[in-house]
Amino acid sequence: MSKLKIACVGDVMCGDSFYALGRGVASSLKKHGKRFLRPEIVNYLSRHDIVLCNVESILSNQGRKKHILRSIHMRGAPDAAEYLVGWGITVANVANNHILEHGYDAAVDTVNLLQSIGIKTIGAGWNGTFRRGNQVEEVTCFGHTIALIGVCFREEKYAFDGGAELDETIKVVKSLVKRDKIVMVSVHWGDELMNRPNTWQREIARELIASGSSVIVGHHPHVVQGIERINGGLVAYSLGNFIFDSFLKDTKWSMVLSITISGRKIVEWKCVPIEKDKEHRPLFAEGRRKSELNQEINRRCDLLKTNMATQLYQEEYDLDVKALDVQARRSLRRELLRGFLSISPVYWPQVLFRPIQRRLGVW
Image 1 (spheres, helix red, strand yellow):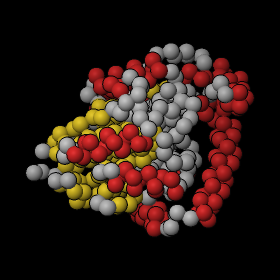
Image 2 (cartoon, one colour):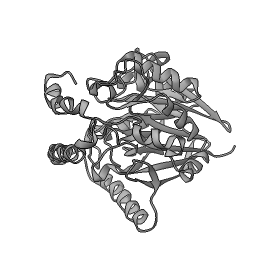
Image 3 (cartoon, helix red, strand yellow):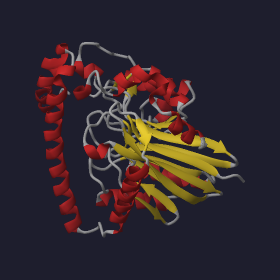
Image 4 (cartoon, one colour):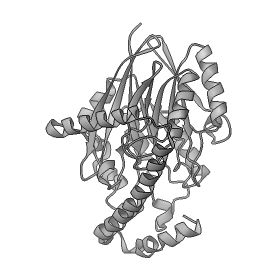
C-alpha cells in the first residue's frame, strides 16, 4: 500500500476586506490571475494527494451590489474557484463564520461552483444546501479512504456550524471509523489572533480524537497555533492565513502542514513556513526568515505542554484576548487612515458609518 500525502493550508479569503478595497486579495487576483500563487508553491502542493483549505469567503456574484460596501466586503469572484483548482486545492471547508455573510443563495452558489469544477466541499450541511446534517466527503487513494468533515464552533451572525452539533459529529466519526475510514475533521474554532488554544479547544480535540478522528485541522484565529500528537492522532489548532489581506504582523505568515499516512497511521508530518508579500501573495520563507519562523512554530507547539486545564490559565488567556482585541482595533484605525485615499470616494461615507452599523447589528 502506497503512502498517502495530505497538505493542509490555512484560511483562504478571495475578496477585498472593507479596509483594503482596491488593494486587497481580490484586486491582487484580478491583477495576477492564476499566477497569483507562485509556481514553487503550486508544485509543492501538487506532490500531495489531498490538499485541504478553509474557504473564508463566498465566490459568487449572487446579490452583488457594486456601490454597496457591505455587498462587496470579503466577496470573492467566481473566477477565483478556477484558480483554486488550478493550484491543486482538492477539498474546501466552508463551515466558518463568514460563509453566510452574503446570504444563503451566494453560499449555495459557492458550493455548487466549487463542486462543479472538481473541488469537494465539506461543512455545507446536508447535500451542500446549508441544512441540518453532516456533509461527509470521501477520497480514496492508494487503498486509503479518507472521510472529511467540516464543523464550526463559532456562534456568530454569519456562521454555519457545518450542519450538526458536536455530539452528532462525534457519532458520525465513530460510524465512519467502524467502516474502516480514516477520519479528518476541519474545525473553525478559537479566538482571533491568539497564538495558543483555549481550554475548551483542547477538550474538544481530545473528544474528537477519542471518537476515532486521525487528523484535526483548525482555522479561525488567523495566526499559527501549535500542533500536537494525541493518542496517535494529530491536532493542528490553527494554520493561520494562507491567502488573506490581513495587516497585523502575526497574520502575515502561516504554514503548510504536510502529513504522510501509511495504513491507518500518521508516519510523518512537517510544517513549511509561508509568508506574504505586499500584494498578499504567499511565498516560501527562505534563509534566516525560514529559520525564525520554524523556531516560532516550535515555540507555539511547546506552549501546548502547559497545563491549560487550570483557572489561572484561562484567566490569563481571557485577558490576552481582550488586550489583542484592543490592539487590533487600534491597528485597524491606523490601517484605514493609511489607505483611506486609495479607497474609491463612493465608499468613504460607508466606511465611516461602518462602526455604527456594527453596533446596530446591521453589518
